[in-house]
Length: 253
Length: 241
Image 1: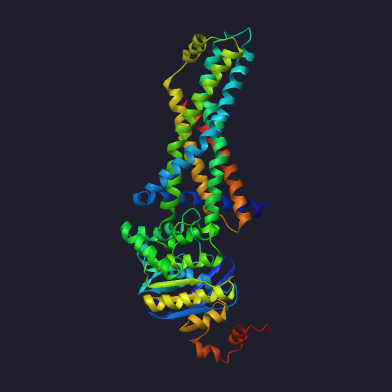
Image 2: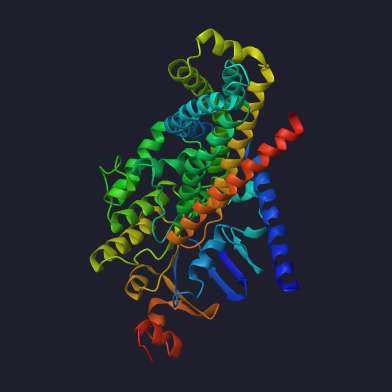
């Protein structure tokens, strides 16, 4: 029993050490702009453009459901224009960043872990090193920078989409007029709602891409190892997103 | 010159190199032979600093590789070409981009990069494949692109990790001829890791047998072919007992 606890404690400390090492290597690679500049643009395009359809799809249906559930909850007790308030606040503060963050953990985190894992087991990462490249500058920095910068943009589109579909649902199914929906939307609006959601999204982007890179570059074995890394990246990212979500709520709200 | 000085390396509790000492002189090709899993590729990776010894030193041009900082290692690697066992071409890049990547790192202009890529591909008889993706190439072609990627850098040393493994005899002979041609044309020092004896005899100036983590015997091709050492004889003759 003590043996198992001891081994797990050592493994946890080692994992923390690996993450620290990874972050240090990444910071050390930052001055090598010549290496990471071009791949960062490629990654921004890849993460951004490829993630937009799935994110908007999720956000659109979230907006519809939010409007319907709000009206169901408010019936008779709260004025219906509060549907606008609830849809707006929830999309900006919570559901936009978190639901889309979780979806992107699956799409972006998994694909990064799989890509880097495959590069690792087929010696492409070693090949990069022998060509005098720092793998952190060529592979990690572009992905992390692109993820951190582009996630808020994607989530901003998701927020807008959710609010628009919530509004359309209110018009079509709830007998709520546009002025009433807008009245509710503006009622408790604060600029902090937007920047809080977008800031949170940037930290999700940073976390998902870091996890994808750390897990991918630590891949061992063949196809089985790549599969395990992919699963691990999604699970770790999802857990970290939920922890970060709670953390920022405590610290910033 | 490359020199292994009493190098020890273990992975977890599994000792791989146990006192490896070997000198590779300038402009010669040394072939390291040995059973699978005896640490041949591990030895090769020490030369470019992909692995560091637990004890002992690997000296390249008078510098201990393990003591080099990041910049020193970058400088060292710019003089070494490495041909990987399965070519390790970058899947997402075309053949030309694979070759250009290392050249771009060395700060060459785009025109010179294009010339070098064309020249290196011609040397491995793969002119016209510039725009193809690695997935569209056969195993032999991938290995030749791997060699071209190393040659294009015009390195002082080329390290070959199992260059003929998994290839048919004719393609293997093509790769052997290519390695000889590379040495003759470019005058580079070569280290070849293989267990293909036909290839070892074809390309090596000297052959060193790695056995139980250290060099069992090193000598010219003739010396190895005429050896009295029972372990080396068994290996080169491929006898099961």
